[in-house]
Length: 160
Ligand SMILES: [Zn+2]
Image (cartoon, rainbow, N blue to C red):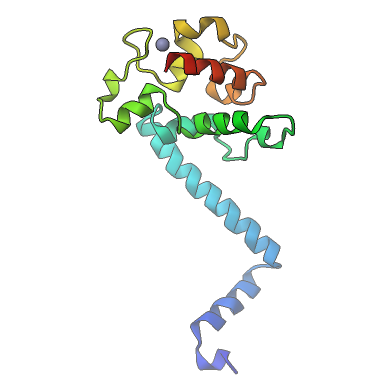
């Protein structure tokens, strides 16, 4: 028998059969393990730098779930793309564009003054965005689950 030949991959598959009741159980455990490892990595990034790319993303999506807006049939593709860019830090706010040109983080100022133009600043603090602000939103996670997020983000391009 193959198992008697001490074949490593056969032994590996025999071990999987002993440890898991079905391929679905194995798949679920692999996915959960991946999510937990990724959450630990993101939590370290969040602890080190809450306004960095990963720290910001983790504050937006601590569950590491697919956003609900991907399920909304009436969302324009351009709006879905814009939301995704802002969720993942692939936008042109100064916190990111300054990185591309090697400007010190503390010098990546918003048009409104000496504030660093982070996504948090734009959503919650920037006086240039005051008229578009979603006043019932108090954290960045809730912002990206609000129906008005797309409109607000499209307006935020005015201060780039
Ligand atoms: Zn500002």
